[in-house]
Image 1: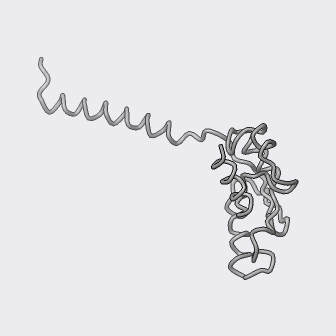
Image 2: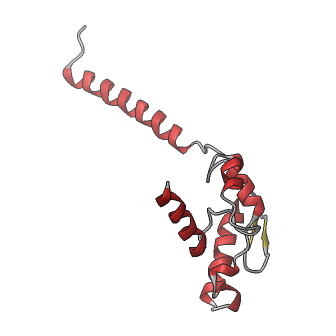
Image 3: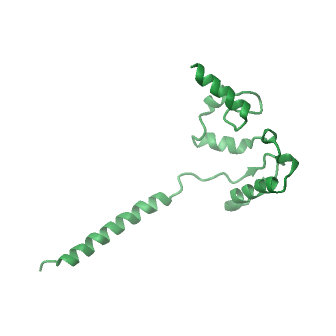
Length: 129
């Protein structure tokens, strides 16, 4: 018995659907486990409450700005979260540890930060090369 055109279309649609489900599932697989501890760069508050750590950390930092806290008035006052920096390095994010040590501007800044003076130094270095 031959399949009718509609039966063939249904099988093709179902096969495409299954293929798309597999592709979507692969996109949902988390490529790395996020850090479980975050330290506020303004007040040293620690956030280690499992899956909520990142969300609570971001909410906390946002409240420093929202409340107009003195500590958050100057980004230069932000202290590096060394655990987060190490996690990024371990996962190939933000350059290798060799690059990081070569780019050190001073003890507190790795040269990959958001400090405007570090960025201008990096820009000058790249312009001269």
